[in-house]
Length: 347
Image (cartoon, rainbow, N blue to C red; front, side, top):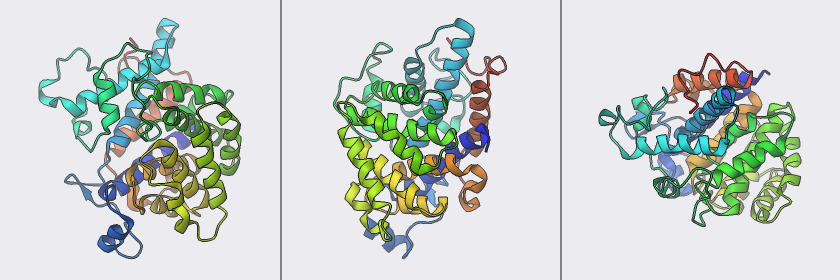
């Protein structure tokens, strides 16, 4: 499988899991089954008036990709770049989509590039409070967030970091963790992002998923990573059980970063297909869209976009935007930066 297939699969899988889980994000498992039947929610339903609507999870993931592309353009044109700052700047563009009106923001100097000009991304879909509050402060670029939040608003958006370097997984881990720190001050939120980036990185280098997870564990041998390491260890243990779905609540509900990652690792490891993994990830009492998105990121990168269920991929919102970003991200990672500069200003 080539790099583009994995990137597109990661982004599209994340969007599908996000869209599947969005309508049930705040429902208990019992309520989900009461409303959608014995199997729970398995098809994309209407959310915010749109069938297959993505939420803030995918919105921020797309701005993560845009930030990474612009970082590549900046490094190519100026020879220097602090990636976490460039990505944080992308998140500030996302913030504009959540708090301003599209029709009156066209002349805002802080809004440039093609992604933010797409009006469909200006939908407000239950954005995370920590992301909003941290970005509103407009801290100097490079500074860490002054809060103690370990919400899953980091790990839900940071899978794209995993594609940055096949030769140095610790580099991708650290970049994801450093960028997470610009909005979330708790180490668990930061290291969950790093761990997901590491897992994706090993997948991109053609490692089996179980090896990708096991190879990530040594990177969590550091102060502050204990909760993330424990959650992944528990996910590994539970994935070996035949009735693993029944044990999913032991990992929590997914509102905080280490729980969201643990649930997603369990579902990705134990689910026999991308469909089974993502359906399990959203049909629980908790942050269903985030666990669906992260699980989708993992299984999408592992299996590629063509192996994701068509009943979702044909209906998910912004598929055209996702495909374009996947193509452009692949191009910048392949050194084809010159063709992207006009759409991704690297200032």
